[in-house]
Length: 410
Image 1 (tube, rainbow, N blue to C red):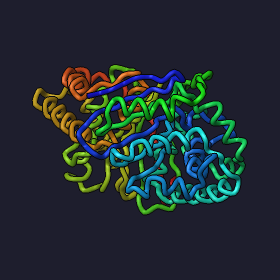
Image 2 (tube, rainbow, N blue to C red; image 1 turned 135 degrees about the vertical axis):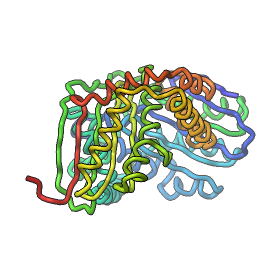
Image 3 (cartoon, rainbow, N blue to C red; image 1 turned 45 degrees about the horizontal axis):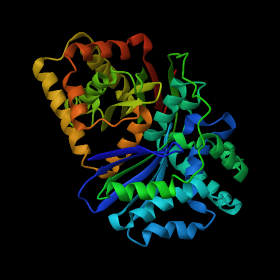
C-alpha cells in the first residue's frame, strides 16, 4: 500500500506500508551541486557533512548517538541534484528518526569550530578521490561534457573554495536552496497512516514555508572533445560518451535497456564478453547512464594496459557500430528484457534503495510508478527503438573521449 500527501508548507510525503518491523526513511531535498554559485563549489556536500555538527538543542555527540543508541543508523549523501538525509530504525523508533531528520535539516547551527574540523575531513576526502583514477575520470569527463555549467562540477568542490566557507555562507545557501516545496519525506516499513501523518505534521509541518524562486540552468553548447591526461597510474583509464536524455524523455527506457545489454552489471554483457572473456584485455568494462532533471550522459568505461588501449577501443567501437546497424533479434531482445526486469525486481527488495527511489520519483514526476508500470514500459520497447537511440547517442561525430595514461604521448 502506497500513501501520499502534502503538508501546507509544501513538503511532500510518500510511504510504502510493509510488514517489516524495520523502517527506512529519509528526506530528499532537491538541492545539489548544480545549485551552487561559482564561489560555492562544494557547498551542498559540505553542508551535508556539517548538518551533523550541532543544532539549537543538540551537540554533535548527541546527534551521533540519538539513533545509534537504539541500534539505528543515521546518514546522508549528496548528488549533483539532491541531498538525502536518511535513517534506519525499528518501527518503535520511527518518531525518533523523523524528529532527528527534521532537527538537523531546519535547526542546525554550524558551529565555527566544527566547520574548521570538517574542512580538513573534506580535504582528506578530496585527496582520497584524487588517488582513485577509476572514480576521478567520471568527474573529469562530466566536467568537460558540461563545460561551463554547474552540473559539470564535481561534488566535493576544491580545497580553495571549501577553505573559504563560513557559517554565514552555509546559512545563505540554505535560505536560498533548502526550499520546503522541494522536499520529499519517503519511508517504507510497518507504520500506519495515522502515525505517519502525526509524525510528519508534527516535525515537518510546523516549519515555515520557503518556496523556490530560481530555475536551474539547462546545459547547452555541447562541444565534442578528445583529451588525454597523463597521470601516475598502472593502467590507462578510458571513457567514451555523449550527452543523453533527461528524466522526462520517453526514450530513456530504450536507452537504459540498451546500455544494460551492452555493459550492465551482468558478466554476460556484450562488452564484458568481448573485451574480458574473449580477448582478456580488461578487468572492468561497463556502460552507464546518468539522468538529470533536464539532461543526461552516457559513458562507456574501461581500464587496461597502455599497450591494449587501442585494441580495446576498436572492440568497443565495433560493438557500438553493430548495435547501430543491426536490430536485436527476437531472442536477443526477449533475453535483454528478461534480464533487465529481473535485475530491477530484485533491486526493489532493497528497502533503502526503494525508499530513495520513491523520494526521487516524487521530486521528478510528483508521482510514483510501481513495479508493474515500469515493467510495462520495458516490455513495450521494440528492437527498432533500441537501434534508433543507439544511432543518436553513439553517433561518431558526437562521441567524446577522455583518457588517463602513464606515458608521454607524441
